[in-house]
Image (tube, rainbow, N blue to C red; front, side):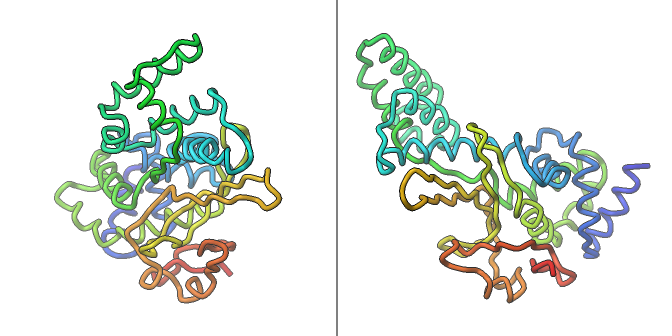
Length: 283
C-alpha cells in the first residue's frame, strides 16, 4: 500500500505536477531504505527533524569544517594552537580534503598520509622527532583551513533517482522523466534545510541558511560559524550544500531584493517553493 502511494506521487512528479507534500512523502517513505545514498537519507532526515540535527552527513561535515576553521584561526584570535588542537584539525582535514589535495599537500595517497600524520603525533607525544615525511603530512593536515560542501545538487538528484528505481517506485525505462523535476527537488531541499541548526562537537549550535553569496551566485546552504573571543565577533559562513541553480531564474524577485550583502546574501525569513516552482518568502 505504501509503495503504491509513492508510485502515484512519483507519477505526478514526472508529469510536472509538483507538490511539496509529494516530495516529503517520497523522501520520508524511503529514508530507511535509501541503499546507502547518504544525500537522499539526509534530506529525508531534515524533513523529519528540521529543528536541530545532531548527526548525519551535513552535521559531520559541519563539525569537521568548524574544527578546521577553528584551529586555523586560533592565532588571529590571539591563541596559540596546542598539539591537541593540531591533532583534531588533522583528523578533520583528512576527512575533508580531496584525494588530489592530499597528494599535492602530503606527497602521498590518503592511507599513507593518515599513517604519517598519526606517526608524527605519536612521536611528538613521546618527545621524539618525526621524519621529514611525517612532519610534511602533519603540517599540511594540521595547519590549514580545508572546506568542501557535504553534497551538491547533482549528487542529490542522482541519488533521488537511484533510490526511486532501486525501490521500484519508478521503472528504469521511465526514470528519464524525472529530469524535469530536478530543479524542484533541489529547491525543496534548500527550503527544508534553511533555518535548521546543527550541533557542533562542543555542543554549540550553528544555524543553516540559504542564499547565493558566492562568485557564481549559485543557490546554496551555508553554516554560520561564529567566534566570539574578540571584541567583534568573527563570522565564518561556509557552504555545506552547493547547487547548480541561480536566484534569477529560480527565486521570486523579492528574494533577490531582500538579500543583504552585509549578511552574506542570505535570507532571515522562512522560504518555500511556490506554485510557480520558485523559491519565495512564506507570508
